[in-house]
Image (cartoon, rainbow over all chains, first blue to last red; front, side, top):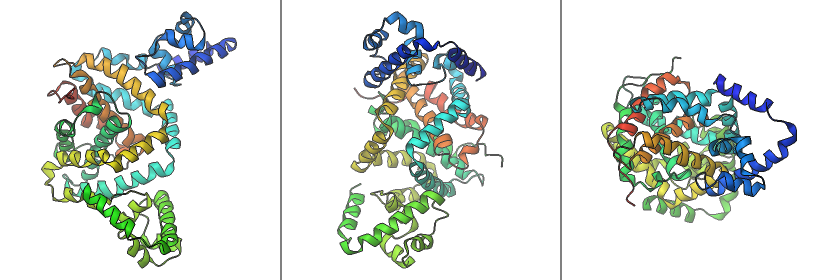
Length: 209
Length: 209
């Protein structure tokens, strides 16, 4: 991630104080339009019109629409740059590559800050109570059914939790299109085998403690 | 879920107005203790002491500690009752059974109310902006790499998103123990093949539209 950090530093240094009002106005309007209409239906031209500036100025300050989006949501990394290695990864290795790309982002200082923000927005109880129930009741009950080899049951159950939480987020909270329109049968057909593999398939690695 | 709804109705009817202050005091103290110490380290006895009532009264009003927990977080279903079918499902069929148990809960009126609450807590932008990026940028780019058969790429990419979002939630936001202590290598080894299967494995069912 050192490339990312350097890029952030470069941009901060390169921002003259005089234009900051215009830049802020562009970002505010971009954020509003992106939130209301999505990325696809928001054009650089529309953002420029809303901010009452020339489209060329928006391009000049922020680059592509995706880069403007990243700036508008105050993402201190350039997603294009971060995701670039993926476009050279063969399709047969994308699964592994995605995990190894995404998790370190959350382990970085930027990621940690973002996590702290999410957790404070959610409030302690909203995090602690479901965690407690998942960890101390559901995990324990499921773990005892699939604890083979002994000691693997909890991690097996928590991999299952990870996939189920993600499906609930994608289907109900983010309501990703077209994902949200899948039937329960279709989802069961695709992720049922995943969960089964976590529960009774090859033993997962365990934390070294 | 009609059994669950009936159970809720039965309980509401059965609550005499005179004891509601005591009951509320028990719930408030339970909620605080559960949030602070987790379910394991909170006893019915400790809740009773904090609420200044007899432990037998807590049992009488709320049943088991898990049922008290459900009442404290205002869960209008009894998790014991909902999860009961799982304990009779053979371990080899738990994967499929879990999907078919969990998703309909979120499709129910209770689930929809809960989703509305989460979405309003998060705010429109916090939902719309990441959705827009996932849906219109990441999904589209990944989809074009794995669109086989044609038309399946977006759903393949969104299944991947579902597993990755869930891992991030489990590892960083909920910080499930012991899950949070796994290394990136260990997680990649276990969920890499899952993601790969979603990307280039058997074609998933597509929404019928």
